Length: 255
Image (tube, rainbow, N blue to C red; front, side):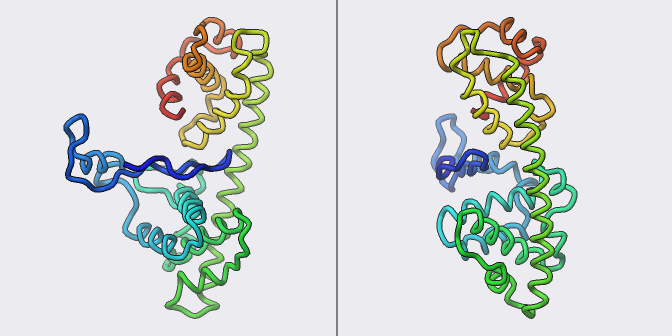
């Protein structure tokens, strides 16, 4: 079993856990292959055949391990797996492959490779990746389809960043009003804000429950650092009810 992949900067999505093939038994008696099936969401979930083709193109043409990792992360955002919705409603409504149909595979690969390269500071020409990933059609036609996918991905990322910025500002304001510096949780303030970013990258509707999620993060971090856990104090500071504790197992899974 391999881990979560290489380190990522704050604000980026961490890589997924990967369970390789093996005929040995795990500690609970299940085979590793059984656990790998569960980890990938079961037989009816996971990437489609077409998305697996995109993954193959990205692995073939990525310039570095980091470039490959970031390209695959962008692919997951813009092309959600079956049974695993993207955290972007726009991507769920219209994934990047659809904008470039019937050449969605190559266009999606070129888009993710190009954007990942730009993020990492590489010198990147979109036409170069279009030529690699869409070799079977004319250059002008290939670039036309590729730009449709690229345009859609930029819209998806812009919407995510706008949404993320707004939610982060709200979370920061709630933390400031909670004024944890006056309590035994004063040293957790920075860690709670960082944990909020990590949790929002994991998907779900956390942005719609900011107070409860922040309270749960405070609760979990207090336990981890051996501080007394006082639900009444946490409720008062974050202006929430006892229902915030419903988020604790979810947050503990993210952190």
